Length: 133
Image (cartoon, rainbow, N blue to C red; front, side):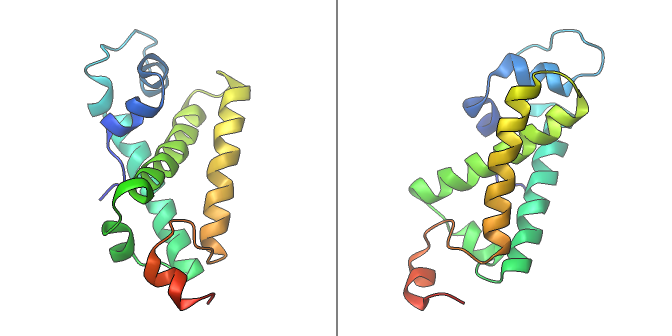
């Protein structure tokens, strides 16, 4: 299960850019089709997998913890997932928007590193009360 949807991705990043990165034929993709494109779904699934691996490494959160997120914490999880997914989509089209790609990838790596270190990235109250691991 992905922690964000294609609709979440295009709500956070330009739909035309996402469509350009998702396609191989360099033909414009109808903006309505972008959220459901197979490469978008793959990038979101890959991003969710990376988050899951970081969770296991860090030991602070479980997948169930993330499934229970609401409000701003859920929005933060979606933003992180989308940033990681965008970094994967940029990898598909090396050389395109390199500055923007690196900026997004850097933010994504920082959050994954924090998760691997067991930091309280999502502000779950039970985790805050428990103190550091």
